[in-house]
Image 1 (tube, rainbow, N blue to C red):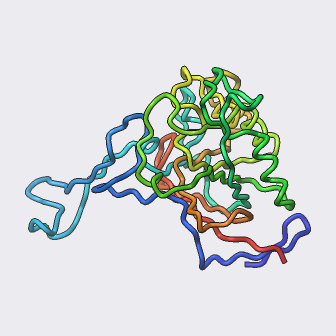
Image 2: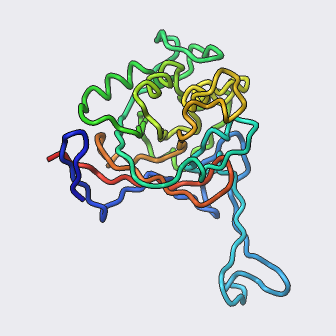
Image 3: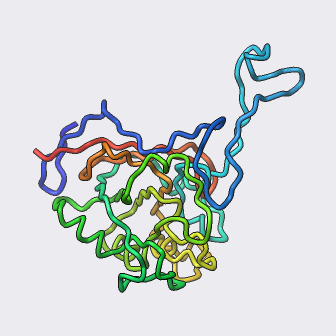
Length: 271
């Protein structure tokens, strides 16, 4: 496809999608967060029917059990932090958006002036506004609607890592979340289990800032950015270069605040 955006001519090859979702193996090693039970699959057994051809069934029919927020790549909406039950399919309607992929090195909270609420421990690792601004400066061009953040070092161990503890992974500083909002980023993709600290006394500061909710806000009607989405536990392989892409976040039609997702990237080239 060839197209024009803000006076720039671009092209993308839709025959060459790059998946940045973690493949979820229901019968093998898989990532986890918050000590959630692993995702599982078992044959349906009902009224004499067995959904497993290996045990005499006529076809395979499995019952899947999972926690979208904890068992792999997923996309969530403002309903994740509100009393109102908001469906991700109502807020993420589908389609492609211009996205920028940036690789960042998180920094210890004790080495930066950036923070969160509550204040991070000095050893906590933060994705900072300073790092975002420096990385984005290398890619002048049209304003992206989506940002994909790959944190370094990027190792294959993340595909099956169990994130446990109060701060088992880097998270966004308050200033980083504000930077994203100021630049009009509507769709954020992270290779982290959460935009916020695992144990933050329930504040979810970065989530609320990104969705445009006031501190402690619990009502979707108060969100100034109700269309925003956050994808977490993505896997951006080292073979995928930083730069410009078209992003297609594919989700099932779940009427829930989050759903398993498969973000697809299509490399974009400027003519």
